[in-house]
Image (cartoon, rainbow, N blue to C red; front, top):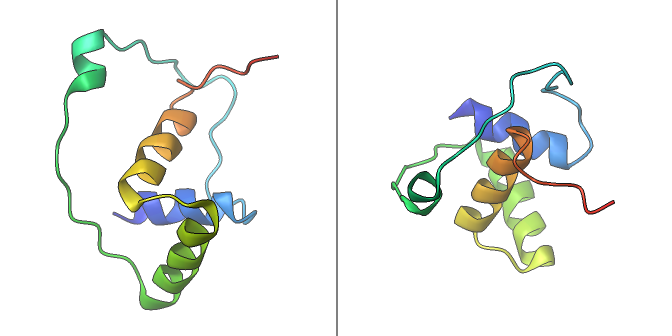
Length: 81
């Protein structure tokens, strides 16, 4: 899933994928938020090394990072300000 790789590169400060402010917003029901699926993510070796270092530094598992990154991308994360 190259989409996840691009989201990760964004997290590193490389704006490789930008979501425009006028993009549609999402509203998910509670049952959608609690459903889980398992995916296999193939990632380039050089990016995998960066991802592993990033996750260790932040104490995250890959699945947790993916959920957070997708929620942020979709605009589901509310800014506490």
